[in-house]
Image 1 (tube, one colour):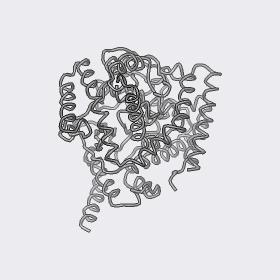
Image 2 (cartoon, one colour):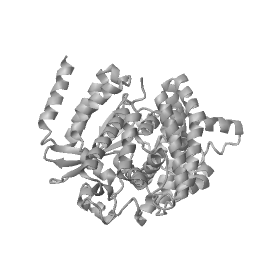
Image 3 (cartoon, helix red, strand yellow):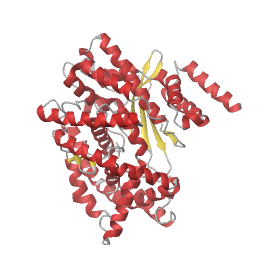
Image 4 (cartoon, helix red, strand yellow):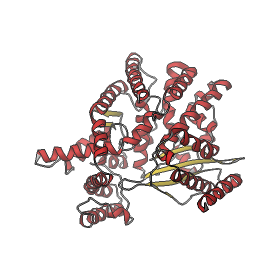
Length: 299
Length: 202
């Protein structure tokens, strides 16, 4: 564990160093992340908040409550989410999926004891992942720059607007009139989500050279994938005209037509088509800050 | 004993046929095999990093194309690296990926892995094998393998978790390290990551 602590300290130092150098030198960064210095600062704040408060609480929560109870909590909030997911599926022109979502809510609420048991999944009604940011992406609206939100974590301009402007406005828990109940439910949801992400967070911690970049890129990739419901057209690898490797080697042939159509870089030059689909949602990085995950999972 | 024998059979048949086995069959058999090993080994379930690394090294590594993975991740800087640097980069990246894979594997509990039907045309030399990891009380996580056909059988050259490619994810990180301190700088960061961040479990 001391090793981990040392890593964390050095990560923090690296983050700080990165922030300073990013301030000192402009350019050279990712075009999708023009606000990197600011984002890094907020990321650092979120990390500290997580280490000091959220993660320990989530660990305690996981240690104290049996898995069955935690699953029940997850299912309960997931069931509430499904209503808004249905609406988003409808808005995205996917009525079959919307119908499935509605059936999920009906079955889980009635047979699954108010949503505590996910009977619908066992019955083959798959859960979907939708939110208003994805709906906007589906409508062809560009994501704008990558943004790290305080407490909430990875997002983009478009998704942030979708989240605060629409998702929260219709979110049942957030709109409860009884404030203590609302806060209790909200805290419960956040802690539960963070607890679910504990393991994934550890894997990311060990995999990343620079956690900020790792989380950002995973997030952007994940959002892109979500917009296409898990089957995005293949991106080509870096475009640099002096690219060492022949293009053919970079383009998987599994979807050749699409690959050709979409062929365009995704690193230094973000083509329009990609901007349209780079939306944000932290569920991917599950790990970033748990809050982020929970918030985005809910709408 | 019977189970052990059938496991043995799977192992040998997958090794012997690796040359001409279809990519989806290959991934499925390795998955089945590795899960069987995990389920029988209490130490692995408890997170023994050495044992897990051993499984990854013996069962999974032979089916990965690390040279290609490293080239994709290092991207445009690959050609700028000397052959010696390329060698070190590949070696260090491999170590990092093995550890990441081992960490992920140690999280395996009782998830069910469903493979989706393979979409492949005859003559394809690259293909994506898609699977869903289904877990109680959670949304399924997709796990996709990009594979290429090589003279020694199909090899994995990218792994996508929930639609995010692990290899692509390193690309910007690597590029930034190179911008900041050159290819040797990137190597240095990789080496210190690999040496410093030994498995945290004691």
